[in-house]
Every structure is written in structure tokens, then in C-alpha cells.
Image (cartoon, rainbow, N blue to C red; front, top):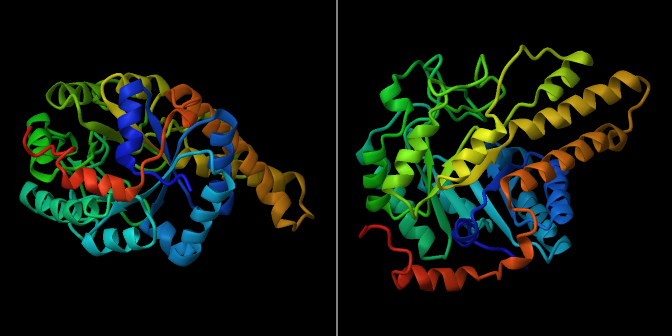
Length: 354
């Protein structure tokens, strides 16, 4: 079983200069697509599940799906990551169900909609780090609040996102505060706010520096050259998928995602984890709409979902290739979570001392 921690995976990515697409899983077909793409490209795997995905699939079933995927592809190192944990109990339950990494998003309060302050974020994140590291499990934290620089609003994704409007001072991660946060918490990866948001409607125009602040990532990387950075809301929202959905009865107004070249720019400045969910959903949805539009008498669920799984597989394979993790799977020698726990206990990954 090649289950590894996020820390080991991102350390390898940092050493070899590539980025890891973190694919959100919502059902069996999306899981199959991600694993097939990794097998096709010889890539390590970073699987994510949100709180709502856990509820939809059911933790016990999800655990067996994940373990089955690892058993099916024993040659691929796999990290299982909780996306946007909202409190210690949520993160702890994920650890109990076999996740090898968790995100504690303390940028919002436990209600997942009210912005917090630095002290709260640092305290709850530190509590998760203490528990997780004792079990060899990695922790991702967040400094700054994810939301649109165009509108000042957030996009609720699976029930996670602030309400109302915020100013740029909260929607952009402050490099100095980010450094203090990493030192105070000892996290393994830092999610940063640079103007991206969840969902398909990220930007009303092709993003430039005023609404996608990649320069902030570069400034943070200057202060924290050894910290693994994370881009949330990083789907590219391909135009062809918008057109596919709209051509078969859907209605997606013109929208723009994060250009792949901007992600590549981020990878050069310490971005090691790139969250992708919307692109997979759009690939599945567009394929389903097309099949049903062209096969109106069909009620074969396998036939309906199969083309979407294939389209999602191809999309994920392309992300593996573009972000540079293709061909890296067999270069990673898996380290057990117990060994990681020993390393944490020995201070090998201590970021609190600078």
C-alpha cells in the first residue's frame, strides 16, 4: 500500500521543481478518472475530499473506495487529503478514516462562512498540527481569505465560503503575516489568497495582475523559500467545456478560470499543490449532457457516466503533464506515516524556529 503524506509528496515536488494537481473526488467515476490518469502518466496522486463529499459518499464507503484505489494501483504513491477542514473534530475524524493529510482552514471560523483573525487561525491550526504530526499526518493551513478581487465576494463551494464582501486587505495574503503564520503553526503547506475563488465563475475577463495577484505568491516565496505553497480555486475552466455544456442544453455564461501558464508561473515560485475540482465537474457534466442529448432513450447509467469518466481522465492526464509530475511516481520511495511521526518528533520539519 503506497499511502504517503502530503509532506513527503511536496518535498519531492520541491526538490524536482514540479507541481501536484490536487484533484477533488465526488463519486466513483471521478476517483477512477484521477487514478487512470496517474497510471497513464506515471504520476503520484493527490486525492482530495471535502466535508460535503465525505457526507455525500459516506466516510466508511469513501475509506474503502480510497483503499481500493490504492490496492488497484500499488505502484503509485497516493496522498489522501481533507480539503477545507473547519475545526479540530473534522480534521481528527478524517485522520481516523485514513487520510494522510488534512487542511485546517482557520481563515474562517468553524461555521465556514465568517472571516477569522490571525490569533484564532494560528491557534486552531496549531492544535491540528500537534495532533496530526503525532500520527505522521501532514497539515495544510491558509492565510488570507479566498475570494474574488473583482467583486470582493466569495464563492461558496460545498458550503465553505464567506458571506458578503471583503476588502483587498483580507482577500490578499500578506507576505509578512504569512511568514508569522508558518512560524507560529509549523504547517507543512500554506494556502494563499491571490484572487482565485471556487467554482466556474472566477473572473469576468482573462485575468491580469489586478485580479490575479501572482506577484503576491512571488513575494511570499521570497520570505518562505522552503514552504510549500498552495493555489486553491485553480481550475482553468476550459472554453471548450463551457461550449460543450451549452451546446447540449446547459447555460454557462462566459467565464474565465486560472490560465495554465499562470499556474506554471506559480510553480516556479514555490507553488507545489494546485487544487482542481471545477474542471472535472465540467468534464463530467458536459459529457453527460451530450450523451443524454444524443441518446434520449437511454437509461443505462454506465453508458451515461462512461464518456465523462474518459473525458475527465484525459483532462487529469494533461494536468499531470503540464504541471510536471508525469513520470515522477516511480521516483518516490514511500515513507510510512509512523516514520513521518518519528521525524516530526525529532524536529526534522520544525518551521517554528525559522
